[in-house]
Length: 395
Ligand SMILES: *Cc1c(COP(=O)(O)O)cnc(C)c1O
Image (spheres, rainbow, N blue to C red):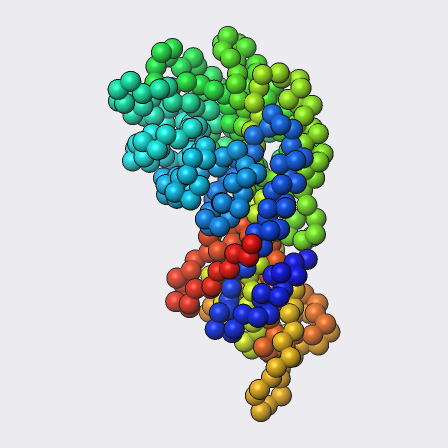
């Protein structure tokens, strides 16, 4: 599960360079190429930058994506600078006036409008630009979930009461947007859940498209675009598994064929980048506590918060280091379950619990997989003031 390139790099890093985030950009390139190839031509692929906005990641994805979905003014400016000229879709709740002004000034291609209030604010700000071209918007809707549809989801953003998007009736009440006004309605956006497999994603996409079509027909409006969001499943318990892009692409092709002239757009984050990153560190201490083995690692969940945030065991590979220069015996866990923790003074700083290992010794290196998305950038780096990791983008 660890690529040879990353394993080699991880073994060569000096201890002082640990912990380290190591990204395999060649593997990311190959994966993104496969994803793009599995999707029909009429489906646009946007990358949700919040999953991992590192410039090296954004530029590695550039040949394969149509654009980027950004969720704040910060991401907007950052992605514009990292990949100039790439189309941006600006989503997310609670957009401020400053952020909307920034987005307008940077020529953001799509605004995903989250509420009637935001629509009014955007229209007012867009209307202040003399002679400006109309601003293209999608209304983000929170459709009620069909029975059981989101039951497999890791996180539900919609299908129930929540801060995201407009209720169907509220979206409808926004229509039609004033003709000749500063905003032009291009269609609908929905991102209802994260962690859905291909059949569940397709069921949701079909329902969103049918709802959007019916809405447009009721108002005699064209429907150019439907963005069905991200949330393609990533299974941390099965690091080798991948979302079934082939089945998903085939299903989207059928959906596209049933709606000629409609552009479908998807905006995955995690499923594009999770597998291309590793968090590499070393065992500082190893002990048995009331009969159980604990390995204390350099770093911890302040660098890799993912297992604490999601409550899983982060999958890992042990990279044995043979050198042992100390004059005392090397502490080890042998053929037993080990709990891997970090250096923080909290029991929440646990990366994996009671995972059986053949052998783990002080000084061995550990490479945590699936650390390419929602990993470093969601972590609370400053807690306890340990040094930051080093970063390596292998191309
Ligand atoms: C977070 C988010 C995504 C990406 O979700 P993943 O689970 O990373 O694929 C896409 N669209 C919106 C609106 C989001 O908030």
